Length: 220
Length: 161
Image (cartoon, rainbow over all chains, first blue to last red; front, side, top):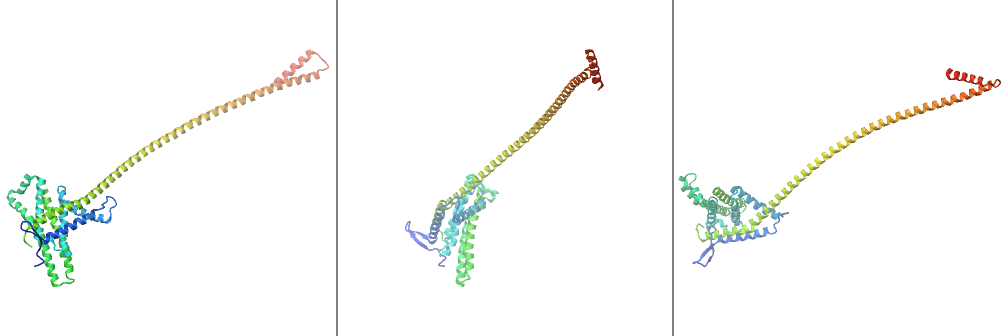
């Protein structure tokens, strides 16, 4: 049970003490790592005769943005950078357990924040594309009777996004801990590949895939 | 673990900050460079197409002028051939005429020569006959006789021959 909890690392002495949990600190570390890596990789970009590193970086970013562009279409292009950011963040957050850190996505606060950001993005995209009036009207589609369910969707979508990510990461972690408890050598290796790497990346993929699908639905 | 708290707010702030940072340092530059390359490729493709078009046009022009010059040269050759034939015929005709003239001249001169020779011969024969008659009639000189003899001789040689 000790490993499952997110400990408070330190407390900001304001308003009677604001606790800062491990997940937030690890998020900072991830942010610093991503930004530093970006700055390092983006140096010396060339239009002609790109180097191997640049080609790799370009094909990676190109692959991600093509993936989102396919789903979002023309109107949703402007949300691609945010979705790439979230994909990178969740991917790294799910894998950082391998380095001995505690995955931030194992904290419900983080997945909830991600889901809230997603639903804000989805509804913002809808309002921006349709205008406030049409956006409100869109709840009464395909028929007014379904309006309550459409309104409920605003809460269900982020909840399911949040809980799916949280449950998967936590579940994978628990299963891995149990396997390590029973057979500490050799056996955990294939399971670790599946639960730590494959599942983590799949969850990152699912999260951004669903978010972009919902955005696409909103801007249609 | 399951308690929502301040960390939710922190995470939202972190996400927004991370988004802005990554957009500035990773996604912006990379997509910028990719766009630039795309533009470069598009422009060079356009250039290539334009150049190809131009080349095609020039080729067409060359072919046209080549065909025109070939036609012209054919015409020149045909004209030259016609001219040559006309000249040939002219020369041939001239030559025929000239040859006829020469032959005519030759014939005339031959005729004239023959007449001349005949005349001379006649004169010589006459003098010979005079001499002969003189020798024969040396004894009996008499002008009347001489004249009679001469006339007789002339009539005999001139017609009897």
